[in-house]
Length: 191
Image (tube, rainbow, N blue to C red):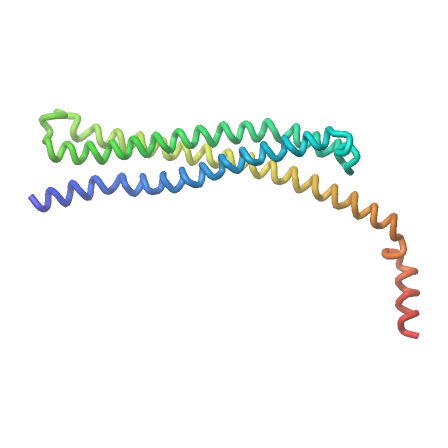
């Protein structure tokens, strides 16, 4: 009897490992949903500023507004992917918990209650839970790619903005970059 109990408990614990993994993904995915939501709010506030009279005076305001308009649909898609991934993860947890319950229940109540399904049903539920977990992981990888695209686009914009400010600085202080001025300054310090 002790060997049977241990084998039943071992079988019940096996889905728990996947449940733990799914739980970790649920936590990180809910954080990602929050970050995407915060990003939409930030871009909305920034867009409102850029369309104001004051915001229109900012350097490259037109380019930034275009970038924001391009990013919002991508953020909406990211949010949809994250919500689908969360749903798939919760479904995976439910199926894997049901797997453990069925394993324990069939051991306690015997095969008479479930009939021939006592051996097959837990396996089917475990496979379905694992498939749901895999689907969620794929969705999360697609969302990560969208996030990376947005980051690259923002970095390109920031590089352009840096070049804009750099050019303004060079125009205001041409002597800083002029080799002749630098050489005369260096010779003046040596004398």
